[in-house]
Amino acid sequence: MTISVCNLSMIPIRSGRNDKSEMVSQLLFGEMVECWEKKGNWTKVRCTLDNQIGWVYSNQITQLTEQEVADYQKESSYSLEVAQAAAAANHFLPIPMGATLPKFDGLKFEIAGTTYSFPGQVIAPQQITPSTELLLKLAKRYLYAPYLKGGRSPFGIDSTGLVQVLFKLMGIALPRDAYLQARKGELIDFFEQARVGDIVFFEDGNGHIDHVGIICEDGKILHCSGQVRVDKVDHFGIHHTQLEKYTHKLRVIKRLLPSELELENAKHKEEVKAKSQLELFK
Image 1: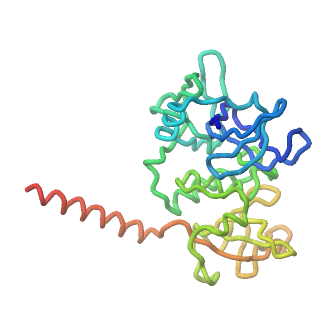
Image 2: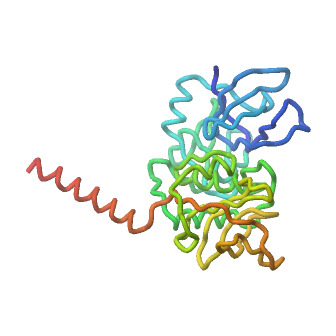
Image 3: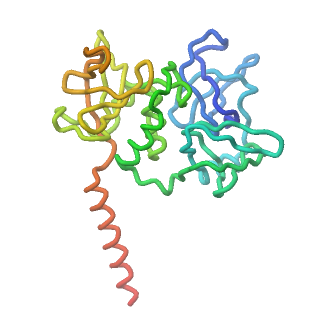
């Protein structure tokens, strides 16, 4: 089995080996896949982020060496720009938000043997402190992105892709499908106990979880329905502002992020621990 990387802006992952097959997801720049088998112009892959399986064009991914895989896993950052061009020696490449920049040193990164300069805003996994403030700040950068089934970029995205990429930027890996995402996190029993940053899942007429969004301030939810938008939400579900009716039925609420108080307490404990360790050497 080999590991390859997406070194194009983004590419489709399809359910079958033709362009008419459903796009089940997308690979963003810098994301890696395990290559399972090759048939004709297509390669069957499994995404290392979420285990999504599908088919991609073989010429849209590039095989990595074992050392490159190790380096990319250890030294990568995430782009926080909605879109920003990376410059190589003889070409430019648009980099979407949520893309992974291997071996980024603050000015440039290297991928599959090509070095790019990148002037945009990035975040490194080791710098991430997951918080509701950061989550909502990044989530609002996706506002008005058009709906695209299987999409994961500001140029086309679906509800589960939106939540997945946002939590990737928090340093938290989530599955691709809503019903699998709903298995993660702490269960919140009542809507009244929900807080900003919680993930809310909704069901279709057959009781299947098929939609997800993130609770914002003032009893609202950010989600993707036609476009990334903000609507009202309560214990019944999502109330569409323009249509003036409920469009999604609430199923379950999950919490993945700590509260600001919990973050502060954890920080205080680390400071006390560090101080105690220093006392030992006096």
